[in-house]
Image (cartoon, rainbow, N blue to C red; front, top):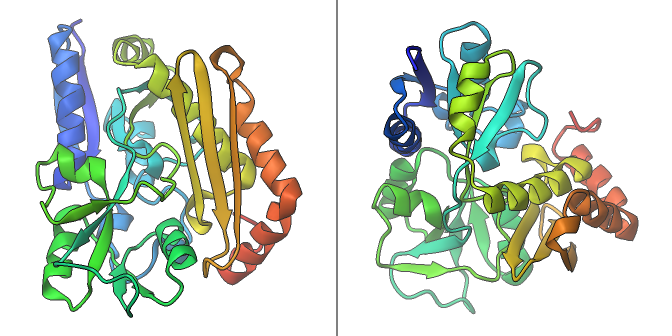
Amino acid sequence: MSKTIRIGTRDSELALWQAKKVQSQLEGLGYTTELVAVKSTGDLVLDQPLYELGITGIFTKTLDIAMLNGTVDIAVHSMKDVPTLLPKGIVQTAVLKRASTEDILVTKGEVDYNTQCTIATGSLRRKAQWLHRYPQHEVVGLRGNVNTRLQKLVDSEWQGAIFAKAGLERIDILPENHIDLNWMIPAPAQGAMVVVALENDPFCIEATSKLNHTDSKICTHVEREFLRILEGGCTAPIGALAIIENDNLHFNGCLLSLDGTQKLEVEKSIPLNQYQDFGKECALELLNDGGKELMSQIKVQTGNPKGQ
């Protein structure tokens, strides 16, 4: 264990928390580590929606390059930010035990959902699901790290903003004034952290694979396979959640139009040992049930007609 494992991470408070979690676990196993923090384009460009930047994996690309050029050995990501197809030469080595998958609405007091409300989010998925449920509301864009977004809510006239519960819990800034949105289907792999390494680095692969949590790996595999077959990435409102209960895997996935007026949903259960192609099967069912036409429409509307 003589090699020092250089852990690449974004330099936001949440990303650093995640990297330190991996660092702590690796050092608990006897490995020597070092944190290397970098800024991504997604952190620097805050005045455009993510889909308009036209970069798949905008929060992970900088770390991918750092790994491939030898600056860092492994990288730690929020798994929902990671493209379903990893760059050549980089492999997934561990999914840590998953935290809460829920979205929450952070409010500035009582919200009367029957009146005109303004809700903020930078996510097409959250926006579409909110408008599907509350078509009379206005949804505005919101970018930045979680601390920045919380402050923007405080400084605004909005009634609320939508966040992933896990991120706020991890850095201990979950406000009391929040509502669990248990009706909203989360992003594929929301609440999960993933470690990636170079495929030609057996030392780091062996070390980090010891951190893998099997159930979390299975559930995120199904959700991300569903996303990959639908050709989603950052450009489409796609939700997916897989849960393991009593040796069965329950899956709920959705695809919506950008304005939330159309919603396609699939909900199925299978024995756990049959999970391997389950995400693909659910996605194909949705595509054959009108999803193909809806995805084509979304790609045109987001300026991404070829789904790239």
